[in-house]
Length: 196
Image 1 (cartoon, rainbow, N blue to C red):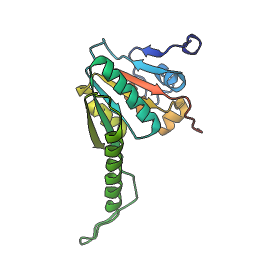
Image 2: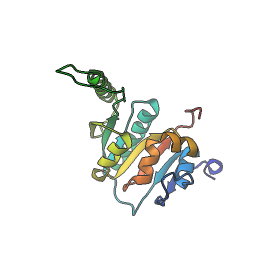
Image 3: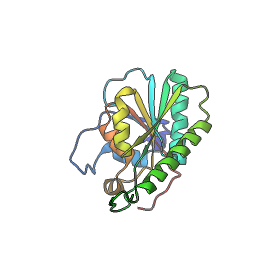
């Protein structure tokens, strides 16, 4: 119906908690195929003064950040942009008498990711919107959910994965939509394609 009516925004109510795999979620199906943004409202609406905008520095996440910025401008809100660095699993490491294993590789990757985050957001056109940045470490969905209570809205991009691939691979947007206590505006960019 959203496609035929050319709706600009789809609004869904709270997510019904299901089992571990949750393959039949309406929100997941809508997120995977919606032509526009999907706003999931878990409870009664409240004023939006603080927006959390998770980014991974991909073009889709920066486009979602631009949408968050524009919303913040209209609503008189402030933004917190957050990037969660998920350290790669490089294999076993042992420390023997002061010999350092591959931890230095992870530290180098962390420094590079943080520097890129600071550079990209330093060059981002905030258009006068009050903002802060946070560089967290750990699982991205856990980092977002940890920060949710200090915000009134989460605005994030989603790759629009289908139910099977999201169940197998995980989806930060899906986990956040399913678990958030604050509203989530998930923005899907249909031009992005994946082979799953």
